Image (cartoon, rainbow, N blue to C red; front, side, top):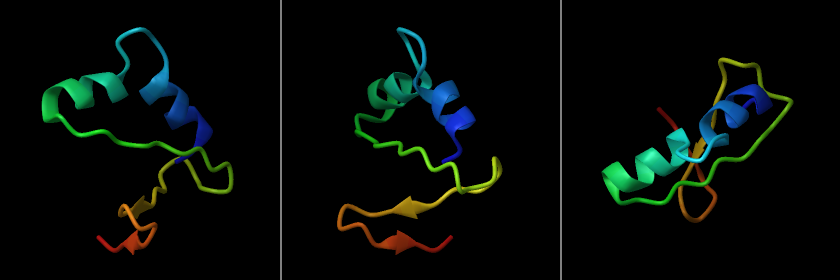
Length: 53
């Protein structure tokens, strides 16, 4: 994800990332990629394969 969105989802004591963990009981990993536009994103599974939406 774009670095600006990464900062939004991870900053603060109770970040959006932690709220997802508490609500859904699933750990997610967010990775910054400055080559992506702010509206672009890529989902991958545990094996690193891209998931098509």
